[in-house]
Image (cartoon, rainbow, N blue to C red; front, side, top):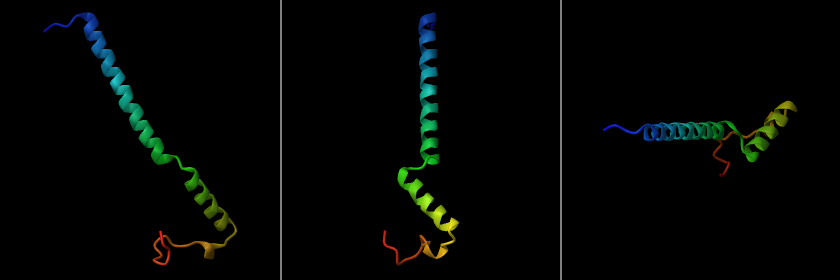
Amino acid sequence: MNLSPSTAMERSILEAVREVGRKIDELRELLEDVLLSPEEYMMIKEVDEIVEEKKLDELMSLDDPKISP
């Protein structure tokens, strides 16, 4: 089965578009893993301030059973 040059080019372009789509999806997943939500940023900022002020007794263990989710 011989494809016409335009059909072969269309398939080649379609494959390239699909590959770009896959790479965009991979990049989106990576960014979701790397970037912080506003809530995560505020939590990290609070911990940094506590550590900076050496108020380590204010930190709570995440494994502490007394802390309810």
